[in-house]
Image (tube, rainbow, N blue to C red):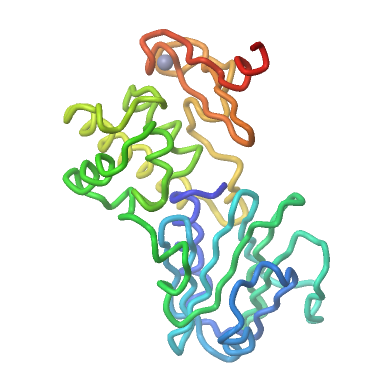
Length: 286
Ligand SMILES: [Zn+2]
């Protein structure tokens, strides 16, 4: 799932490439992806793209006349910039991976695509981004939050740190992949309980959050659009590296699986050398 660094890179790419161009047409191929009906998609035709921004993991394409095309890419969504489209024929609703196409006046544009059968990509055409329910409830940006804000937000919610850090209403932008990386960098167990963290642990977590996200933004922004791939992240130390050596200490990275997700961590770096119980496995055994 694209998280803060990837969405930031996509917004940066659109600022370079699309801002100043006029929209020829906004085409909706996956009817269920468009969550709003007023203004209609035709409202953007002939208007210029004026900016591209990020709200947490949401991408916001600003279009002349106070219009915002706000997109949540969900788990398997992505944005593909095209220098040209093979045909000028409008997309027809169908079962393909393209959900939304934006054609610009120089013949270029971008497709919002979603792989797989679970269609969760969501696009909203609104006059105020706060009208998008997911945007309205976002907590402060994880990369921008200062230490007092960060501490206050994490202490406001009692729970396992992995869950709290990825709760978009606590802090926005961090998902499954970067939370694994942040907790590894901060040397914290993913199951540590937030209100038991010391000031020093919270300060380390704050520093790790900025470091991990900042580095990832730098790496993502440095890539060319063609190489920007949500699922192919470089520089990860534990996430999606189950069974591989931890680059910090050499211990084997381990995994805990849940019904539809999993987390990875390093026992030596994060849990005093003790492997965490894999709840799914223990349930099977019992
Ligand atoms: Zn380690």
